[in-house]
Image (tube, rainbow, N blue to C red; front, side, top):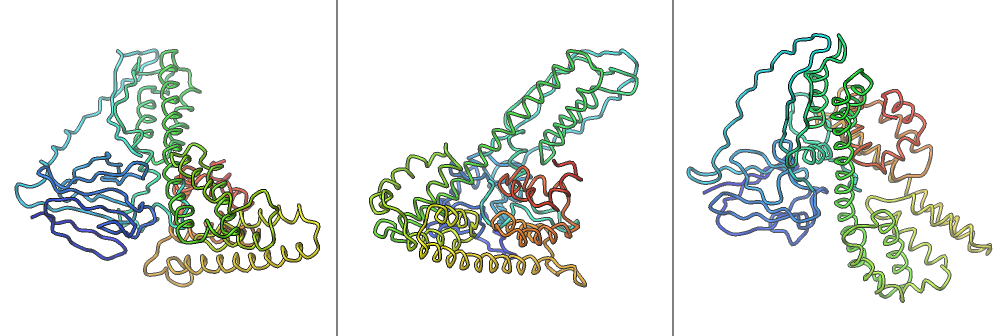
Length: 465
């Protein structure tokens, strides 16, 4: 009988597998419940079949990964090959005669040296590579991947995996028309092959794009230039597709946690303040994810609460307090939205008492903002410290993200500047991690991070701006 091993949060659980189905997700209705924030309420289902343990991933969620690549929507787990789902690692061990047949390993390919001779050209070659399918920036306070000790090869950067999966999905063919010498010291074929390899293997499209752009600066033939331009176009299209898929996945999580959960827990269909708070969140969602598949469903929900919200009536300070709290008290909080509501109300009001109430609510919000910063700093210190020895459970990437979340969610300039200063002291986190995790994976975080002068200066020094 096959056994499924689940490792999450430092603990392991084992399950004997029999025929039948079981759902997996982070919600209470899932048969196999995971605690990772990167896992949807119902992320998919397992089924033990004659072929082996099959995972069917739900639509619109981030795909699990195996061997550093996102798996198809229907995937048969291989014996002993770890499957990463959020922060959880799952591995199946089959008894003899169970599961899929092991895959044969590919034979090694011997590189053919290129003879460097001015003006030389070779016959056209066609190169193909496999690609696999994949499905925000996640809006939580946990990174997709934590920077780990060099001795620990685990920990897959989900944003990187998503991109690699897209670049690896299906087949693509690019022809080179020369073994490639546009000059004595430039080997086109080798440089083009290296750029294409970066496109497949690197965790960000930036390195591949820079390599291709550098080739275009050389004295290459028109046919070679055409090949490079075609690959640049391919890279740009894949990057756009990656961003769209990641945004939709992020939006799905936001919809479930910030809208559906809010409607279920609070009297949005009975009390005006909560109805307005819901509509404030709904407007934010539609502005950020205008083409999300849940748009139609959300507009129906908005219609249900519109009469309760009485949007044709002016907002009172009681309404304001409820709506501001819906942003400042949520986990994680969104202080940008809370302060924007306060500023809008203050600009539109001339009543002295109302303005005093606004300042009172603003002071309350500032206290919550400071408390959030203190909490994030405490979390960061728990997994990373330079005071004496490193923490026994050192996680530099997690500590970095705890501080980056302050910049992304708080409006106070001093808090953000202090968070940036502490981030830049975490020496284990380098430009590659920051680029993958934020510049590519979390554009909203990145936009607010580079608005902090010290971080903006560091990003420029690293060639990221």
